[in-house]
Image (tube, rainbow, N blue to C red; front, side, top):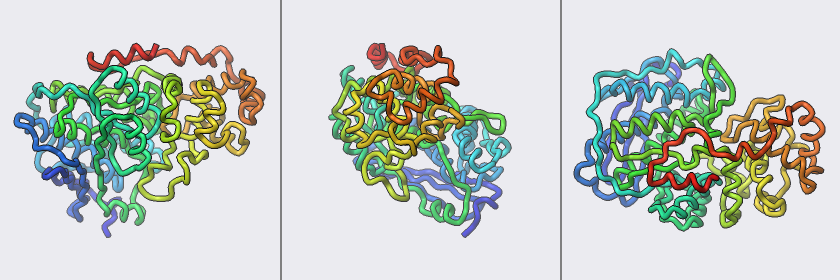
Length: 443
């Protein structure tokens, strides 16, 4: 088996689509082809007039999804067979690969700044409006954020379809509970990638949200939607640490910079009337959990525990492992807004009364630790949530709340621990006028 780490080039070989399946082909040097398949069930024939847009969307998917394979070897030369991208597209990809692989580079001790440069040539023909139907694709991930978005869209009367990639029964149960129509897309990675990983190829975190976004662009054109509405909040734009001269953010492709840049690229390269946005962008994680707390219908089905969504390896016996950063953060973020018995019923245990969880919560607080490489809120949000609990009789004697009060709080400036300022919407967003009404629910 060839070692991708010894390859001189990474090649985007070709991409094609037929009968509801996209085939994305890659290779290291002149080695074996790596073929990824994306399935679009019951896809209709592409309507006349969308051919150019669909071609641009398929090419974008090919170029973005390649990050899963490129990272196995990170060669210094990137080759795009069959058509070099224009300068704007190459810049979008350079930025995505560099920042989307920031955590991967940090964990593997790599500096990718001299590796990542997509070839570029020429210009593109500006995209035109396609008259796409006024309805939304809503990605569902199984956690609280997208379920909050589902309720907001229903309240607006928006025509929306809940969409997910992969075969997670947990996500499927959440989709059923939303009451929205569902669309389940399939992604099959090239099996050779797992062989490379077993043989010692470079491995680590990739920007999955960017890949799913590109898949949904193709879906929007196939099935007819003018909006792709994610559920990423403003906290997603906050970095974890700095490395090799750049900020490293586990959630980079959930952040505002990627949303803004991809939305602009889609309007100029795919369809002038295709919207890409996040419904929750002006909100902190705490503000999202406050909205989630208003609706109990999802208590028995949702989970933010990432161990439920592994491609390989064991999954927890129930919906919450109770040990990972996501479990820690969601428990802490919900605690100020839910009655304690309801929260304990969701998790099946009290994570804040377990001394063995101390290090995990310290990391959320950024107390002697950096924030975990996970989709969790900012340190100031965790500190504000624990401070609020430390003032409440039903929580203040629990082991980690008491420790916060006695050990951590004396080292903090209490004037920066108020919960209310973190619950106010602020910052930019990319909501189209039809969906701007969701802002009313934030106040």
